[in-house]
Length: 395
Image (spheres, rainbow, N blue to C red):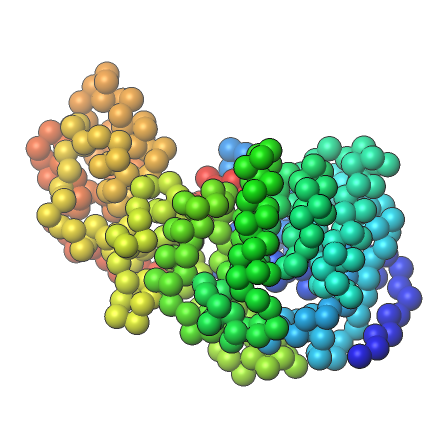
């Protein structure tokens, strides 16, 4: 197929290549996308979470949307009829630095479709980053996307310039990938690429580590399968994060008739992911419905607690840090505060506990204070989605 690439100025290109970059996840889950009003002025500026919960603005863009691939769900697929555009490295480096110099963005997320070959596409991305670091003297955050099939020498060069490397696995197994992208080889292109960036990260750890992304809800995969994979990735590859991208059907693609993934499903996956990374849970401990998905009525931690009534209530004044973090409504920060506070005084009232940051309306049914139980009420079903949870997670 021959592409006709229309001559456009850099700002016109950005409108398209920034918009299609939204399918790569690097910050808040999609359920929050409509709530971050301060980022809505420019569709290519996306919220992510920096140190100490500070919300930062990422300039998120593709080097090119010209693609040799034909993934069934992708807006950039080869057989889809839409405008094809590419940035030169000089154009994109200059454009980003203009926004950065004006204080409109805090960092760069750079990806690309595969134009001609993975290596040729990566070389243009790499040149963009090199220009930013050398010509413009940019020292800020760069998240650099590695494309399937990229040569390891290019990955090595990118690692010297970027703060984070990532590659999208897209699916939890080769069988599911075949439902989304039959032209890609799961073992060599995707897992092999992850092994390459993991090896680079082991040799010289990146400031912000390595990540991957999975598409949720397009191939009939289950949450159990997704989280089993995430657990293996955290253990085996020391990933900083696994991102979960809720499937959204796109016109003029083979999957355009599929229903979108419910935002609550994506959110529950992130909650379960937090339990794997920060609370000592294993995938096997998580509670799943008969269909293999997480319960939607309760968050994963509450679902586990309700399934293990024999472990509750715990005595706040005696429980260790690990036991406290298993109590619904008590997170890592509040658990640490509890452990420190009780060195000076005993917890005898709920208002004392509340001052540590614990959510006592949730926790009261699972603990005692000096032997006194404050619960007994029905645990309510909730679909409440708490954005604050993500403000304690870095990028």
